[in-house]
Amino acid sequence: MSSNLSFRPKAGEIPTDPGVYRWLDENGRVLYVGKAKNLRNRLSNYFAPLESLHERTRRMVTSAVDVQWTIVKTEYEALQLEFTWIKQYKPPFNVRFKDDKSYPYLAISVGESVPRAFITRNRELKGVKYFGPYTQAWAVRETLDTLLKVYPVRSCTKGIFQRAKSTNRACLLGDIGKCAAPCVERVSVAEHKAISKNFVDFMAGGDLKHVETLRKKMSLASESQQYELAAAYRDDIDALEAVLEKSTVVFSDQTDADVFGIAEDELAAAVSMFIVRAGRIRGVRGWVIDKELERSTGELVEYVMQNVYAPIDGAEQQEVPKEVIVPLLPDDSKEIAQWLSELRGRKVDLHVASRGDKAGLASTALMNAKHSLMVYKNRRSSDFTARADALSAIQKTLGLESAPLRIECFDVSHLGGTDVVASMVVFEDGLAKKDQYRRFSIEETTDDTGSIYQVLSRRLKYLKNPEHSAELDPNGKFSYRPSLLIVDGGLPQVNAAQRAIEDSGVSGLTVIGLAKRLEEVWRPGSSFPIIFPRATDELFLLQRIRDEAHRFAITYQRQKRSKSVASQLSSISGLGDKRVSALLRHFGSAKRLRAASAEEISEVAGIGPVLAQEILTALN
Image: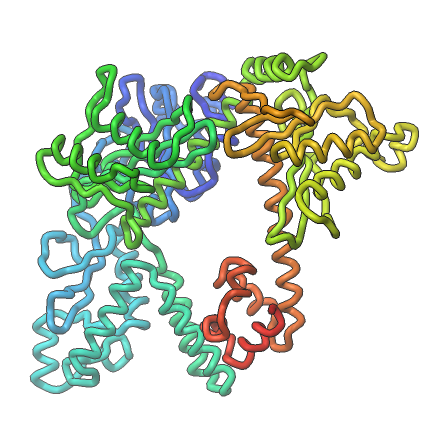
């Protein structure tokens, strides 16, 4: 790897999602904008040895001092955002999209009595719905040709339409099924409008109802042995899935908005801000906040508004747009909206986006914020000095004889008292040792304290008889003595853990409990918790270890629950692997599937009313 690029991020910090990346010079000028299906794979190419890079690429990376990226949901969104930013920043190392020519769009004239689908480079037509832009004209032609097979909307010019109408003879597209031929009244104007609406709905929102409807029709045709009709439906499904791309980065109207995503935990929050002007994303900002004080999400939103639109310390003030979209309205949202309106001089709409393109962009902003928070936590925990200071501070606060170089943390997870499982994660020198993680199934238990007692008893048996440890633990990893044991919970859980230690006969072990709500640290038998200072490395490390144990337990519990439900469904006559997968995918969880009615279950492709009732009976 190149040793000359000091700003190179660690490979684990770069996401594997689709996205757009920017290379910047020392003055903050954007040198290059690119898109990638997998950001990590793409950016790693730039950090190869300099002598192996193309001369132009080598000149660009050596001129840069930073690289930034923005995650989006699909390659199509990455393409559109790349298009927008190349137009805006005019980066010197970019070639594609750099000229001022227009790009092709797929459009439909919804303002006409008989709407028409067509390709255009003109974005100024009235009564027209646009989708795009596309990088190549052939790509948009291929998309339109594919969609006309499923939604046979009129695509001819006004002259051809009038001629066909006067001669009462449809054109070739009508004869081959790519036009419903409203010109010769094969369908009424109202029926054609309905087809046009389906076309628009699908392109605007990637409406999966259309695909599910076709799947049901295909299944019914197959069951009635109408195989040619089933094949036609299958081709329509394939056609729709080929163009099923929903854009959240380009709006069809002239939206002016700032869209915020906030990801947080007890100690820090990451904010991602998408700046949308005239329907296009003009910029992205992001930053991380250390929570010195406990703040609710609503309070964080207010804090962000104040710092963005009334900055201190001479920072640049952000222009206030028509709309400000936030993840949650604070309690004093009316006052904040009034304040923003006064700053702007006109009314500002402060709200939460609940559906449509704006909700989609809010989701993308949240995804970027979550990634930023993850990178921030990983960077902080991977800093050797910070880890050493954190372990030293834990030793001092808890009164340990030495720094806790090996920490084991336990968490219990269940669903309404069923499928009870537990996890054990191991951190050595402040770093996760994933090869030493363990999972536990708990068959019978009364509550969380009973589960904690069982799990600790099972773990401590490897320390009770060192002479037999090789038989119990051939790899020797369970036999390592921990410096500190952590359980997820408060005083009841830590008391149960201490009871397990005493009953095991193992001496000299220290156990603490970390309660989530206020991040309090409990010692066995204590009347009051130990309060670690907020925003410190020691509390951050304890929290990260506890969160990792929780994640590992939840993952195992979900796997166990999914296998249980899948096995129940697979035992039902008429349900194969594909239908079981479709059911679980449709409802998202076993809980939702169990709570569904027979009518709701029958909406899944391939599931009829009789089979839906059998599923309901088997699960309940």
